[in-house]
Length: 138
Image (tube, rainbow, N blue to C red):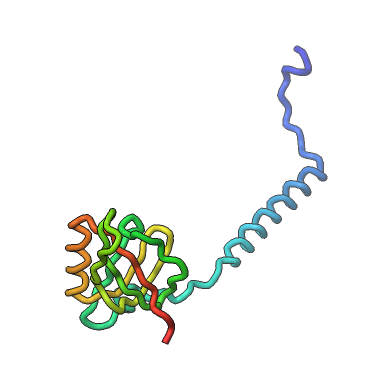
């Protein structure tokens, strides 16, 4: 029988056993240190708790806006004016003194009362665009 076809149980050389043990120890150390590096959870306040009494949160998609909201941060105040596309001189005040809850490139979330929310919905359903006016700091 040829020697290459015979199977015999060979022992691993000591240097390979040491390398395997060292690799396993480094893998365990990497996994333990990876899990201990998780950042602490920030205290996130739900939107419903951040709203004042008798108010609602309204998400205004940026597609509804006739002008971008640049520089609006949480707790800033804005007014909304409704304009018809193509009309140059007509603008209708829709909502005053809205508190910005959140703003990003996709949507603007504002705190709004019931009457202003209805006015925004009616203006938008009649095809008007909303122009946000950022109020100056008081």
